[in-house]
Image (cartoon, rainbow, N blue to C red; front, top):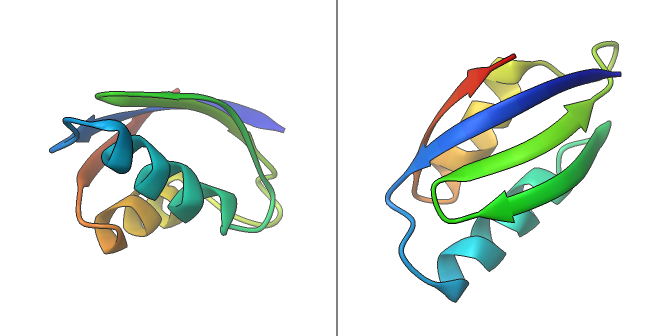
Length: 69
């Protein structure tokens, strides 16, 4: 498992937290540690997914994300 932090733009409320949480939970191989306004801490199975897929999931939910290790 790899650990990463997603820096997320556009979040401002509890609905945003839930939307990002649902989007990341739907990605196979992801274990969410925490989702806060502006960031998400998680672990992912590099055999199943990658940081670009995590960023895409957040983008599909309506926010902008960039991953850092």
